[in-house]
Each structure stands twice: as structure tokens, then as C-alpha cells.
Amino acid sequence: MKIAILHGPRDLRIEDQPLDTSHLQPDEIWVETRISALKIGTDRGNYEGAERVPGAPDYPRWVGDSNLGIVRGVGSAVTRVQVGDRIVTRLPHQSAYITTQDASMVKVPPNVADEDAVYAHLYALSAHCYNKAHFKPGETVAVVGLGTLGLGAVAIGPLFGARVVAIGNDAFRLDLAKRMGAHATLLYNDPDLHAKLADFSDGAGIDLVVLTANPWPAYRTAVEIVRPNGRVSIVSLLGRGEADLDFNPLSMQYFYIKGISLIAVSGPAGYLYPNNSHDPRFTLDQYAADRTAAHILSLMADGRLEPKRLITHRFHYSEMAKAYEMAYAREKSMLGVIFNWQD
Figure (cartoon, one colour):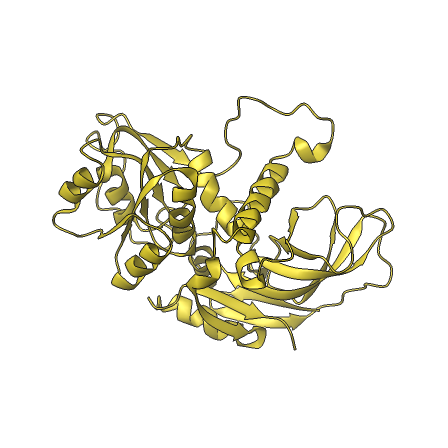
């Protein structure tokens, strides 16, 4: 099989590695990849050599975490999927792999297109931005940072009952946010930003800010616009690859006096009604993530979510380094990126 391996900053290679599919263990599943998706923010940081995320592998390392493939073989004890099923996993950019049935995966409904389904886990993370912040229907939400993850939060918000304003730094991204269902869009440096947000919220203020952008100026926007006692749901890797701070991120005026909550969208959300099942799938956070991804796929099947509308570039896997170089150059026209693994 072929796999993308990053050997160091801007040194991405497609390598051949052995994959024995002739002797599957009882719980093993053999999958051939159809497409994988590039998560530009995180993968760009890895590619350019930004600060290493704790727990992430060092160089040489795999890249990517949105993989859609078709099941080609199953072990004798596998019941979760069968040959011919399409599944989405959080595994790297690679042409094929062997996994186990207790790993994170979700089966794709027949009427969901590959290019929508590949975003299931990424959109589940967008949804988690709401869940972990204890969002309630009817609240006003601002999404700061309009990459694929942020636009997922824009699209999901109205389905959850949010009134959503998208805040970005580029007219192209704002237009995409409108197409994905934002009730309003604003540039972060609009001189009338605060007045327009007050008007958007009927004077009540922004209840929840979903922050998906890494740069510190985006964080500053988030804590400035959230209402007193509001919440900022942070799914970005703040400051990664950015210049040193020119302000105190926990200044009294932004944090203590406003009484806001800063919420890291990592790990499970609080839940009042835990499941006491002895089935390990129901007691792991992985199951909760897969269950959310399955719900995302059901919304796609119903025609309520269509991530493929955001795809701007499609590459054969052999051109992957070219795509990463474009991301490194921060080309604003680049958003949804798909790699085709079919030869």
C-alpha cells in the first residue's frame, strides 16, 4: 500500500509499505481507500514544522485523519461491517489499511456521496464545539475562523437551533459561509463590528463564540465580542506557528471582569445521563464521537448537510505535496481539498 509520510518540514513523500491482507485476524477489517480529505489548519502546521502538538508523532510521521474507503475483507468475528460497505475513519492519507472492528469508524449510508461522507468526523468535531459548550437552542453564535472546520460549525449551527453569524478575514470565505447557512457574515476588522453584532443579537450579545482559527488576533476578536458571562469554545491550536503575543490573553478586561468561560474542545463533554452498559463501545468517548459522526451522515442523507459544496481542489494522491505547498502558501481560494486514491 501507499502512504503519505512527512519526514520533516515540507518534506512529504508517498511511500510504499507492505500490507498483508491474506491472513486477517478474526477482528480485522481490510479497507481500500477511495478518497481522503485535507484538514488544512492542522496538517499545514505539521507540514511547515510548527510547534509539535503534545502526544502527536514526531518525524517521520503520517499525515491526515479523514479517510473514506470500501471494505474488501473481514475477519471471521467481524459483525460491525461487511464486504462492500463504505466506511469513514480517522486514519491517515493511505491507499489501503487493516483496522479492527473496535476502532473508530462509521458506516456510510447508500445515498450519501463519497465527497460528503469523508467529512463526517470533521463535522462531528464541529458539532462537538456546541456540545462541549452546553449550547442551548435559541442562542446566538459567532463562528470566528472560516476554514473547513469553521464552516462546518456554521452549517451545523442552524440545524441545532442557533442563530449564526460568521466572522472571517476574506470575502470569499464569507460568501461560502452564506452558502452554508450563516444568518449573517462580517469581516473581523469591520469598524462597526460591535454595533452590527449588537444589532444581530437584538442587544443581547453573542452567547457562544466558536473559535477555529489559530492566530492570536482571532482569539482577541473572540473574547472581545462574546457577551459578559458568555462562552468561547476553542477548537483551534492557539498560537501554533504564530508570532509571539502582543497582548495578555487573560487580561482582566477580556476574562475576569467579563466572567466568560473558555472551553477547550478536547475530550468528552459533560453528560447528565451516563450509559451504564457493559459494552465497551458505550463507555468510551470514541463511541460518542462515532455516534455523532453517524448523526452527521444522517443529516447528509436527508440533504441537510452538503460539505462537498466547499470543495475547491481535487488532486490525485501523487500530487499531494503540491496541495500541501499551496496550503503552506496560505492560498485563500483553497478550502476543501480531496485526494483520489484510485489508480
